[in-house]
Length: 93
Image (cartoon, one colour):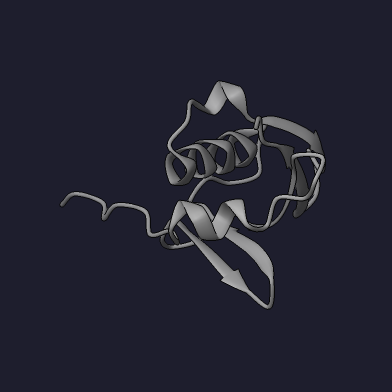
């Protein structure tokens, strides 16, 4: 059985959460049943299937964000939060 595609809000809604310096804060839930991006109370929440082992969850979040924004994952830079749930990415303008 094929996995369902990830669910995420419109790119405009995600772009609206980026600050003036191109930073985007994300709260991550690794090991989730489904992959999804949600906006709740003005924050971006990312749910990924990957476990937080060896950076796999970070890579999954980067890929999910890139798909939602329509850009290559290599363009997103993880600024902080490599080992915690609260992460910050730099999104190129």
